[in-house]
Image 1 (cartoon, helix red, strand yellow):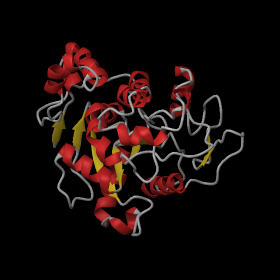
Image 2: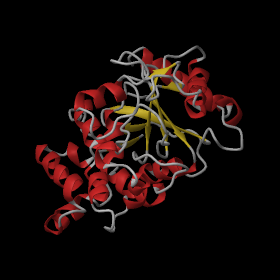
Image 3: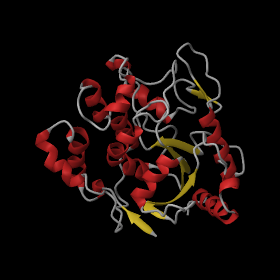
Image 4: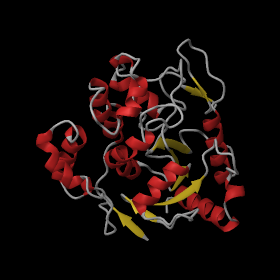
Amino acid sequence: MKYVFHPEALAEYAEAVQYYVVHFDSCSNALQSRAWVLEKPQIIETFSNPTFKMSEKTLLHEIAHCPHARFCRENPAAEHPCSEIVNYQKSLNLDDFQVPEPWSGHIEKAPILFLSSNPSIGAGENYPNWSWSDNDIEDYFSYRFGGGRKEWIVNGTKSLLMDGTYSHAVKFWAAVRQRAMELFERDVLPGIDYALTEIVHCKSHKEIGVKRAQNKCVEAYLLRTLELAGAKVIVVLGKRARKAIQGQFNIPEKISVSEAIKIGSSERFFAFLPHPNAHSYRSFSKCFKDDELEKLRASLHTWKNGE
């Protein structure tokens, strides 16, 4: 079994220091030395602190109001690893900037978490921007699949548009729903049975800017997001997300299902699948051996029974 921890788990002061690193390490030369200390590898196979857990609301708003994204948006000519992906929305006013997507669904409770490269940006979608209130942003992402002040998504696949109508079924969302059904062997409730998040949180088309932004976004948010998640099974979709997770957790390249890895206070299994858009087999039944698939199903059964 592997054990990992994040610097925040060391002591209260680490939380304060990380706050400054996350918010100012690329914007203030005065804090670069402090940032350098915590930007060294953040995974150490020693122990985890089961008593530390960042609140869902705190991390959600930190990602949605990402200081790196705001810095790049306000300084478009600056050299920064996130510049390319942030500037994908350069035609929009600052208040209209579609916020980085923390996750979708009840991440602290969902037994499955799907992890991909970055969210795609959609024209006409009723999606949070920086003019939205914190309460509305929180409602959108936590209750995106149901139970919020609006029906943001119907059937787990169709997104609410600005004109009040709904989009056609989004192929990615339809695919992850099918993968969740395959694991549970029953119909599923999007946002309850599974949640979604990404390696890079800013939106773009065709992963534009993801390669450059990946290390910065992973350092800032990945481990804290996984610590917060309640998932027993983390399904990693696509080559870019696979490489990021394998690098962070020292998982061999050819592995389809990892050993149990303790992140925060919980043990997780990583399962690796092609991206839903890949021109290859994409289901568990086609990509996994029978014993690997049963291993994942058994872990979800254990999670259900609170073991």
